Amino acid sequence: MSREGYSVISKKVVHEGPVRLRIDTFNYNGKVFRKEVVEHSPSVGIIPIINNKEILLIKQFRHAVNKYLIEIPAGKIENNESPYEGAKRELAEETGYTGVLKPLTRCFLAPSYDTELMHFFVAENMSKLDNPKKMDEDENITNFVVELKDAIKFCYDGTIIDCKTVTAIFLYYFALHSNNEFRNN
Image (tube, rainbow, N blue to C red):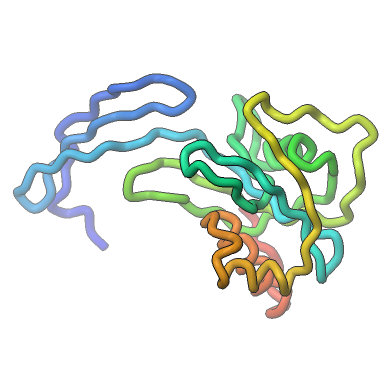
């Protein structure tokens, strides 16, 4: 796909905070368009594997959608962290566990309006931490173990509706059942 016929006219930041909002004006094939863009830090998502048949998921209230969602542990990569370090920290904060992390893949979560790139990891050989790290103040998380086959079913029946979680579960299932090695990021 070519970027021919595309040029940026301007980028204006209209909000500064943990995420930035900007209005971009660009030319595409002779027409001028405006687009809101959310500038978001890169992030991590982790699939904690209890054994080949069970995974650890979290349940968390999400203000933006006014619902409790079932998700994989995930969060923003903090200043100067590598994706690996961010995944290790988020796993500890949200589950109280540590594990051996293997990169699975990475993808943009909503590239039509958001710059967030999520790095997915699988956590194996899990062990409970003696002194788990504290969650962020705005997090109210509970953990639970679910069989992988049930997690797949939950993705289809609407029990799990978080896109990063659906993506991670299916990618892990595919890698597990096709003997694919996890991708190095």
